[in-house]
Length: 149
Image: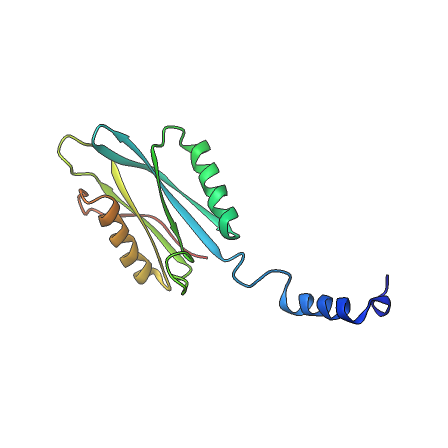
């Protein structure tokens, strides 16, 4: 069917879709991360992390599915998304930090995830997340992941 055969309203919708894109600008911009945690008694340890980039709730489900397949012994998931915390995006730079666990009688590692507009701001956010989710960490930070998306 040629463009001239379309009625005016559908033609306008088609042209608008082509100019503006078929999906909203932020639909594919979501960066979702999970820190996968296992527990033994009162001890928590991070097994690893998962990063997925994609569309809104679909990316969250994909990250969870990947985490459950990769880490079958997981007990908890700590979610963080660059678009969910506030109306303003947290930034597209992602940093994942790890440190040792220092709680008496526990062994393992702690992990924190952070987003920012650059590495420094993402690192600051990741340190905050590490302290919030794993207050008993040794402070010897190791960068597991640092990338701009």
